[in-house]
Length: 382
Image (cartoon, rainbow, N blue to C red; front, side, top):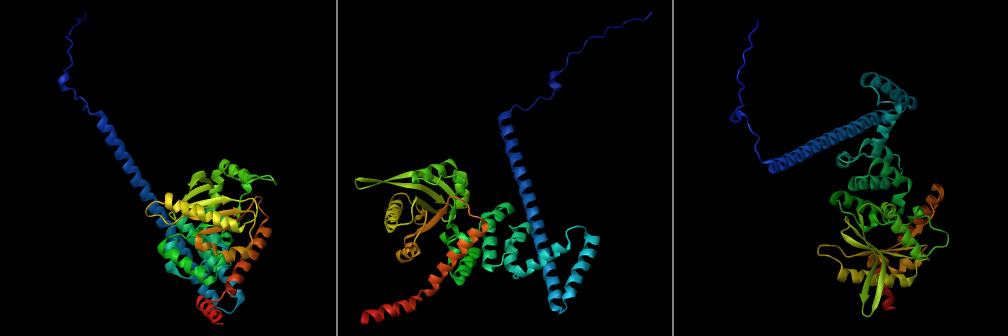
């Protein structure tokens, strides 16, 4: 027979149990801050690694393209070029895998042709991927290529955004493209050096407002209301850096009230941008009205450290000679037409090419400042 022995139950000694430190609020806050900081470090390290890999890939492709181009161009035989591409493609693919097809090798050679200066390329490839360059290198105009490359770098355009801007002929719609080539090259060089935007790089003509879905017969109020309904699309068409501030901005001057249609601020330009909407063509009186708005904004709204306000008059059409004689740039006024329906690509291209030709012809026909002064002096003597 088994004897059951009852042992006394020992009570736990709470003095041996380690109790948590009762400082929860501060500990949780510290943990969250620490976690956020570590996450930021990880993301920054990943971004830096991705940029380094991207930069190395772009420079590798440029060096390969430069080397092939030198060999192919030094040969006088047409069949040599075809053979070297085929041979290189086959052997490189066997050794290094995909990425070295004949098409890609052609892209690399074209890349070396389009961007012959490695110093400029080093700066660009910190921000632009190989996919960016693939879109840019087949543009015919070197100034056009430089514009899209520099603006992609400054404004951090995605590959998709860059493609859309090229498709919508953004370069041809900027005020910059209407200047002589020497001035365009000078302004792009300054952009590359100072990373500073100018109105000629920011403002466009025409603006494509097809997303507003306006009827054939519409008023200025209809345009304004449609813009406010789809402000996101309007800001995308205006370009990067714009912030909406006000509609129907009231300006009290003496005993009269004036109302500006739309007021924006541009971060890159560091200045207010006044937009006045017109359903008809530009009239000479529109200049005086915009000058009044800009002067009022300069006296009442311009903050310390900001540049003077600029104005955009969006109208259905414009008379080129009127605009030329009024010298609107001196007043900080940009005249732009708008399209309520997107033209077919070919029609838009023809329209912009004709506009560029007219603008450049007017500039070429203008005498140099020194010659103009001599002509004025001769007239006054006569």
